[in-house]
Structures are given as C-alpha cells and as structure tokens.
Length: 510
Image 1 (tube, rainbow, N blue to C red):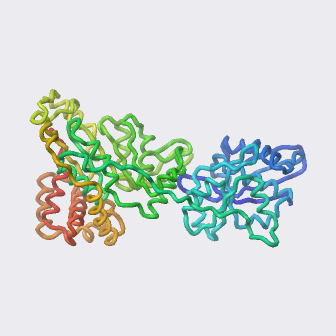
Image 2 (cartoon, rainbow, N blue to C red):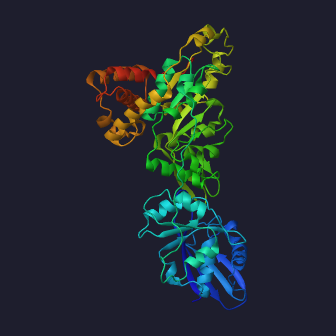
Image 3 (cartoon, helix red, strand yellow):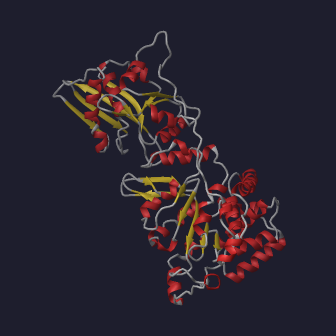
C-alpha cells in the first residue's frame, strides 16, 4: 500500500479540529513534499522525520517521491505536533505498519533527531476536542503531554517516549493487549501556594467588606486612594477569599494555559490564576493577538483575578479593549487571515490614585497637601472613560489613615473566616442560578434579583438622583443580591440595596 492516512489534530484558538495526515509514496524523482497550509515549523518536519526514522532503525524511502498532505487544506497548521503522525504515515505507506492498526487512534508529538518524543503545546485542548468527538478516539501522546491530557476524564490516552515504542505497539499482538502502550495518568499535585492573609491589612474595614462582597459575587472593583493606603495589599488578598475551582473551571483554565507560551504548570492545578500585567502592557498583550492569535492576559486570568495597578497609566486603547470582555466574558480576536475566540470570565481588580500627585483628600491623615489643579485632576480621572467605569461593579475609596491609628489597629479577621462566608454565598448562587451573581444576564434580573417593594422604590429614587444608566442599575441590583446572599436572605431588602448604592459613588474630586 503506497497511501496511508493517520489522524491527528491542529490547534485553532482553543479548538482542536481533526487533521488527516495523508502520506503517498510514488515512483519518480526522489523528493519530500509537504502541503496543506503548513507553516515553517511543520515544513521542517521533513528533516526531523528523516533522521528520526533512520536513528530508530527504520528504512526511509530515499528513492521514492513522498507527498504529505495535511487536510483540510484551508486550516493553518503550526508547531511540530505532526512529526509523529507523518513518520507513522511513511511507515504505513511502506507496509511496516498495517493500516487497520491505525483505526480509532489519533497521534501528536514532536520528534527529536534520535526519535525521542517531545511534548506538544495544547495537549489539554487536544484531549477536550477528542473527548467530544464521535466516536471517541484513543489519543497517543508524548509522556509529558499525555500526563497533562489525562486530566480530561472519559478518554483513553496512551503515553510513549520514543518512535520505536509506538511502532512496536502498532505491530500485531496475538496474545497481548490491542495497544500495548501505558495508559496516561495525571500526576497527583497539591498546590503549595502561600496566599497573603487578609488580617495583615490594618484598618480599612469598609474596603475589606467590599472585598468580601466582590469575592462572594465575582464582581469587578476599583480601589481608589492615596499611595500606601493598602490598595495593592487588598487586591493581593482577594484570591485567598475565592472558593475552590470546579472541574469545568479548572479544565478551561488549564487548557488556556496549555496553549499559551508559558505552558500549563501541573503544580497550579485547581489554583485560581492571578495575572498582574505592568501598566505598560499593550492592547494585544491584554486581550491577545499575534499570528496565529494567542490568548492575552484577560484569558489567562479566566476563572481567576486580573489585577491592574495604576489603572490610569495603562494605554487608553488597552483599557478600552476591556469593555467587551467585562460584559460578555469572552474575547474574539479577529485578524485578516484567522479568527480565534477565547473565554475571558475574569474578576477585575484595579487600583488608582485619586489625582496625579496622589494626595487628594489625604491632608487630615498625612499632612500632605494635593497641589494638583482641578483641571489636572479632571484630566487624570478622564483617562478612564465613562463606558469603562460603568462596567466596573464597585468603586471603593481606600482613605489614608493616620500613623497612630494604623499602629493601634487590631488584627482583623483572617482570610479563612471570610472565605468560609464567601463559599456559603457562592453555594447559594450555584443552587439558585448555577453561576456567580456577576454573570446574571439582563433577561434574568427580574427573576433572580427581585427586590422588595420598599427596596425597589429606594433604588429608583437613588438611580434618578444620581443619573445612572440601565447598566449601572443592573449592576447595583446584582451587588444587592450578593449582599443578601452573604446575609443568608432569600429576598433583597432595603439594607442590601442601600449598601450596594454606596459602591457606585463617583471618583473623589470628580
């Protein structure tokens, strides 16, 4: 047989569409042609496969015209994941491997010149796509990638470390198993992440309460205050208040990291990601980009926290790019040749000073006077557009405290106690609507965030007086629903609404 077909998968964003690796051997002038919209890394497979076959003890058809087609032809192919299926296709076309032994199997793996299998990027995405295929295939991957992909349950994943090992397993086994390769098992990892404790923050009771509400409902928040008041300390302690990740959340987050440049770290399995890019980050760095499109910081923070310190110092284009993901929980990266969609359900925590010098409103506590003109303060705060501010659920002032008050302040509640209340509130939300309150849609507001008559009248009066938009009104209703969940209440009364209104105040000096 001079034609062989081996199944594999490409990466297209977070998806992993099936690719048929077709290998044809023909008489004629010796050549090795690779077609199917392959990039440079894939085309270099010719030399890797040639050397790997020879070093593994298999004959390479030097006197044949070799044509490798990666179908479908209009799907871009990248990386060295097709080395293993190409090598197996050449051997099958020569008759070394029976074609029937390749049925129901999918292969991915980069080959070294000695025939060793090296890990591939996006193993979790490959496994998730294979799990959804009908019928489900058996996935054969390099050992490291197989251990990563084995976190996807309900899929048969086999691991191998050398090309010769795979070829030997594909030989007829009259008395042995159908595929004598070890089944991959996910390494048991326990994340040893030492999260900062909330009790380290002295004073700032109002800001701590806001942080608890944000954690309980998955709400975004903006911390505003002079330098050194504890804004960054508060933001760093939010991950310690969040509930454990569900299986679906953990898989989605791990799959995103597996296709990123840094790869997936097994030691951080089930640990909520925390991303804190520098304020010089560009819009593509935040939302993703490149060719092929890769996930940005907002997608890598999916299921976790995105902390943006010195928010007004970020480029305006980068901040405006956050508006759609904050609303929809996903980002679509469109380029001339390709489009990729990534989840981006992150919890935004941002921090900023109230003015360029930072000391607006801090004279009573610190003795430092703000020397910024009203026009300078207005220009500084205007770096954050109204539509962006409108999408941030909570705007919390973190005031300066006198040194004597800081030294005399007693330790507050530890993170463990606050996290227990947050977990109970999240459990109520999961039982009621299957997700956090921040993700409630506009069409569900009347059902899930129904207010008592007195609370509805109070909210209407506040919204009219403050000139809120419909979006602001809905976000206050969600906040009030979260406050009621923390209190264990089934309905939303006046007290939760009144507290929620306090978190939509204008910026100081605005």
